[in-house]
Length: 162
Image (cartoon, rainbow, N blue to C red; front, side, top):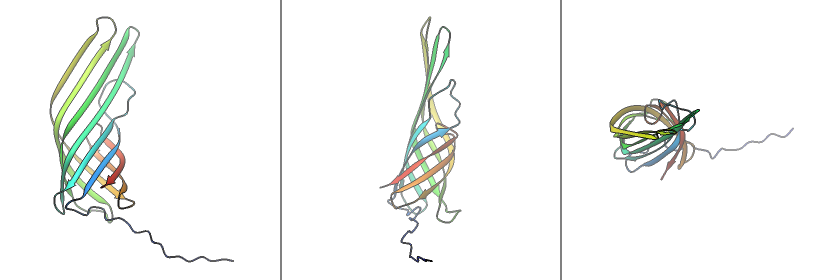
């Protein structure tokens, strides 16, 4: 019988180091209110730590989908661009838990490709709340999830720390 003993060199990365931290989230969304089918909501967010509890940054979300009818097709798209502010509070050990707000601009469009081609766009100021969590496996790589309503109700993906 052989028994192996070792010392793990694995250490959990500091989840939110605070001031000067730059985290970049990139992921997909689940649950949206855009008509049609197909298309996967994608999002990108950047957070910069301004102190031990607060970060600020930007948000970009995009989704397109389509709906086919016998005579043609509707194509829908939605783009959200904005700034975000986040408050970090560790509710679970070794997990960066946070909540925040997004203030931005939403551009939505619908285009009919069929008899009597038609296109409409709309836009306006949006504000949204969210809660989320990040877990860094290493100093530079982790996973995140956010619940709220950016481009989708639930956003999941990878987070990179610079």
